Amino acid sequence: MGEDKSGKLLQQKLVDALSEISAQLAVQSQATREIMEENRRLQARLTEEPRALAGGTRAGSNARLVSELARRVPKFQFDLADSDAFRRWISRHELTFVEDGEALSERERVRLLLGCLEESTYHRFVDAHRDVDDLYEEKFTDVIAKLKKTFGSHRTLMVRRQECLAISRSTFSDPLEFSNSISHAVLDAKLADMTTDDWAVFLFLRGLDAKDDAETKLYLMQYYEAAERKGDSVKLADIHDEWMRFLQLKKQTKVVSSFPSKPPLNLDVNKVEKKPKRKFKKKTRDPEAPEADKSEKFVPTCFTCGAVGHFSRGCPDNKSKKNARKKTRGIKGLIVCRSPDLMQRLNQRQRRI
Image 1 (cartoon, one colour):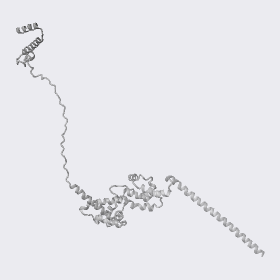
Image 2 (tube, rainbow, N blue to C red):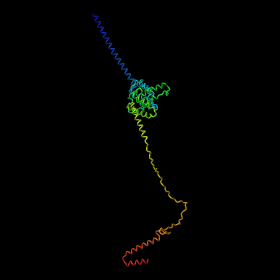
Image 3 (cartoon, rainbow, N blue to C red):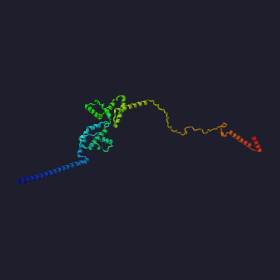
């Protein structure tokens, strides 16, 4: 019995020693794993630091992916003559940005997209969105929508729907190209999203094909486009009321234009011309002209008696009239005199004369 107890005690001690050794091995194994994990993190940090210095806060693997995708996608250059160029470009390369660049962040994907724009095209896009503080902070889908609005087709939805009916097989040589154009036109015109009112308005405008309806169709198309820009829905009743209003306005315009207009007044306007100043020429004696005979003298003629040889002021008849006037004044003076002796002497003297 004593031997059995001693054997059991020895076995228990061996079990305890082995369990203690296994626990120590487990602790050492855990410490080793932690050390290896720390070494792995340090190694990854050492390899990423140089790339972080070259590419900012971006990861080195993303920087390589961005540069690789940029080499695969060609530059887009906007052309005014081809308004559908951006739609074709983005439809061809959109999966490259989305699927191949799945590991990229939203900002990196936008940066890659804008980096694929040609220099003048990029500045044109930035100038068109000056109200946005930072385009790189926008979502990738929002940036694509802005690019389509800037460089896409500016045709209205109704115009695109009307053009669907103008597609003809005769303009395409390849059946596959014809099928692709049909598919693109349907998607571009959003025919799947049309409601009953949209179809009614579409068929109404399509039916205005007479010669007299060309002006009416243009007016109603402009009315529909204005409502589309405002975001208002247009029903067939609205189009009909606007059509009646347009016809009434057109009729009133014809009535007003039928009244005879007053003839314009003919106004006589005298033309005022500036006359040139008269220039007086100074008379100069012609040296070749014969000189006048200085010996010829002027012979005066009297206007009182008509005789030749004297002037009127020296005419003898004027002197006799003056003497008669003097005598008359003297006679009058004598009449005024009151002395009878003096008057007698004056009368005698008058008789003598």
